[in-house]
Each structure stands twice: as C-alpha cells, then as structure tokens.
Length: 439
Length: 165
View 1 (cartoon, rainbow over the protein chains, first blue to last red):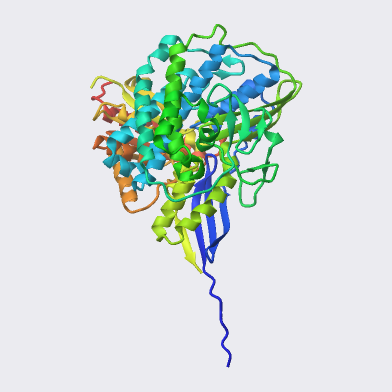
View 2 (tube, rainbow over the protein chains, first blue to last red):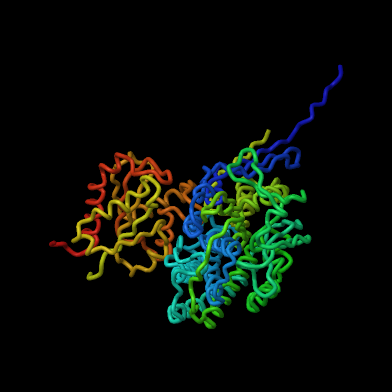
C-alpha cells in the first residue's frame, strides 16, 4: 500500500474592508501563499467624483473655484496646478510679489496637512495608541502644539485665500485680493512658535522606532534650481526623467485597474511603480530645503532612511514642516504687496498643463481650452493615484515582515505602512478590520 | 454671560440633505440670530472647540445619517463624547467620513481629552437620506426644517441667559 503525500498549502488572506481613495473609500486585499505574496491590491470603491467632467464647458476662473472642492486639506495645490496651467497657456506673467504669496499659500497648506498627519494620524502608530484621542490623554502638550501648528497654517491659508478650506481668492493671473503687509506680520509670532516646535518635531519623530523595511524606490518630484518645489520646477526622477512641469504625459499615463474606481498612474517606460510625496521631494531636492530644514534633516540621521524605509516618511514630512514654517517667515519678512495683484489675460485655445507639489506629492492638471475660452477636456492626476502602485508594491515588502506577527500586530503594521503615504485614506485606515484567514 | 452663542453649522450646502443645517439656520428668527454667532464650518474642527473659553457652551448643527429622514435628534455634546469613548473602548470603529477629518464625535472626544472635560453645549441633528452632490433636500427634510430650526433656537436659548424677546 502506497502512501500519498498531500502537500499542505499555507494560504493567508489579509483583507481590509474600508480604506478611502483620494478623499474616499477603498480596501486592502493581501493574499500570501507559502510565504509568498501572490496578490496585493489596494481596491478603490469610492464613487467616482466626476470633477473632470464638472469643469467641462466652464471658464478657467470657474475651474479654479471648482477644483478647490476636490480636497479639503489640499485645495491650494489644486488651485495652483490649474492656475499655473492656464497662465502658461495664456502667456500670463504674474507679479513677483504675487508669486511669493503663492509660495506662502503653499506653506500654509503644507503646515496644515503635515502637522495633522504627523501628530493626529501617524504618530499614534509609533507611540502605540489606537487613535489620537488616546494619545492626547497621555501626550497633551504634543497634541496641543500640533493643533497650534495646524491653526497657524489654517490662518495663513485664510488670510490669503479668504477662508481656511476651499479658498476663493486665487485667480488666473494672481489674486482677487492681496493682503496688507500688516495682516501677514500679525501671524509671524505664531509661525515662529510653530517653527520652534516643528524643529522639535523632527527630533521627536526621528526617535521613533521604525519597523524593518528596505527597498530602493523610484522617486519622482518637481525640482527647481533655486527653491524647494511647490509650484514650479521640472519633473524629475531618481533615474533620469527630466521634464517641463507641463509634460507629465511624456513619461506617465493613467490606466484603469480592475476593482478600482481610481485611475492608476504608470510610467510609460514600464519600469513599474514610482513614489511621490515628502520622501521623494526630500530625496530629490534636499539641497533646496531651507537651511533650518536641511540642518534638521542632517541632525535626524535619517536622510537616507527616508528614501529606503517608507515608515520613515514621517521624518521627511517633519523636515518639510520645518521648511514650510521657515520659508513662511522669510516670505512675510520680505513681503511687499504686489503693485498689480491681478494681471489681465486673454484666453486662447490650446492645452494648459502644469504640475505642482501637493503635500502628498506631485499633482498634475491638463485642460484643453476651446476657441470660446471654455474647457473641452480635463485631466487631473492626484498624488495618491500615482502612489497606488507603489503602495501595493510596498505592501508586498511589508507583508513579509508581518507574517509571523500576531493578528493585531500584523493589522497595525500594515495599516501603519499605508498611512506612511498619507494617502488621503488615512482616516479610514485607522478603523479597518483586517481579517486573516488561514487556508 | 454676555457674548453670542456660537452655532457651528456643519455639512455641505451642495450635497442634498447635508445642506439641512445651512437651510435651518436661515429660518432662525432675527431675535435668535442676534443672540447667536452663526459659524459655517463644513466639518467641525477641534480648534473651534478649544478656542472657546472653558465652560462656554456652543451649539453644533448637522445632518445625521442613520436616522429616519426628517427626525430631529438633540443631545448634549457630552453625551456624544461618552458615545465616542464607549465605541473606542469597545474597539469599534467610527464611521468613515472623509480623509483628514475626524468624525464629529471623535472631534468632541479629542477636545474633551485635551480639556479634561467635554465641550459644553448641544448637538442638534436631523436625519437625512440623500447626500449626492447637486441634489436638493429630500422631501421629509424640507417638511421638518421649521422643527429643526426651532430645535436649534431652543438650544441657543438653553445655552444662554434667559431670553425675553
């Protein structure tokens, strides 16, 4: 009598029910067979929001107001990508002071976004709390300082944009209203306080224990010869891509992926996923950081780790927080109201395209403008769409580190990895139910 | 107390029943509006609560999913803090809402954690059923708007000095 040997297959299914998209909901599905990841998917089931259709038939200034509604935390980036795109097509040169105000506007948005993510969404992972509320009970000064930093950012956006969320002052050609110097100087003290705490923040997060994780991602961001990238520069990558900010489509495209209502961005050269966001910017443009931010990055000892370990993106985010506060103070000190806040412009038909840097990474807009000055077609590529493939690739890397962990620890680690991207799905990833099935 | 009562109006005016709070505060009688500081906020920010002097009451107004459309729901803010803490303590998750925004009860709980006391005041909600962008208020919510406004007015009255207007 012979004995048949049945091979026992160890298959585990990790499913995360509810993530969110670029402001929405999504899910995570990870299947591991005999220790090898055979499926890693960030599913996106957020209802399509149709903003690219909403702007069809509208004027450029309508577009500026509409796209601000795409995101409550980074409306500035949406407005900036659109306004720069139209100004590039129409040949508009804005007043240098208006340009400085736009950088200040960006500083406000980055401060809001980064302070919120570091302390309220990501730090609880490292400090062992299930939420910021639990963390607040034990680390009240940290949370209160974080909220004060965020408030300083909110105030900057409000004074420039008319309100802290979905601002209304940005126009093609500049601003509908430029603030008086005194209005901005009133905020200097809060920004100086924020800068001090941002520098402390780099020290704090550099002391967090980073889970094991190592890979060499392809990183993509804007890079500018003279300034840290906000709304100008060239699209560059760690492996040689070098494009005008209007030419994103020369190297990248969007594809529909089964099971996802979000388009995934891909590079045309077939080299696979790429990473955008703070870790990419710090990797590619560190020399343009404000001296105080460069100093903080060097002192952190994590300048290399932010590139190779996704968990360490919290350090990159904190370094950018220092940069945003420091540059905001410099801009306010040097501010002279623009002689001409709003430059007159004439529409002309053609393609308007531009990329800027949202807090979470490169944000590309492209509009086809018809003879009547109306939008015929629009394409908006947010950073999270570009990072989705990288998230899935990094889940494969992270999965190998969690297979031996208990259920709860595995849940925490995978969610923490996803949150490292600040993918606009962070809130949802805080309350995911990860189910692990052993076959 | 001599100041106006902050009324934080939550929701999104262009998304169906999420506009209910905005519509209701528009129906408040002038005498009530004079005693209230109407603050459209979209989503409630914990900073708004922390900016209030300790113990100063406020009124938070929003549409609520999960209630029958048009049903008015009034609770002390402290009760929502208790609810959030109970859910968190039980390991249950808050409802997803939007990235980078905590759900309202979590905002209140965070304020409570930072203040060692729950925010003072009242939540006034109305059940909704339609949240689509561009959609109008649903019929049950339209019918209930006067009652919703009356509940908000009552909360303003309860938060302030006796009102003799």
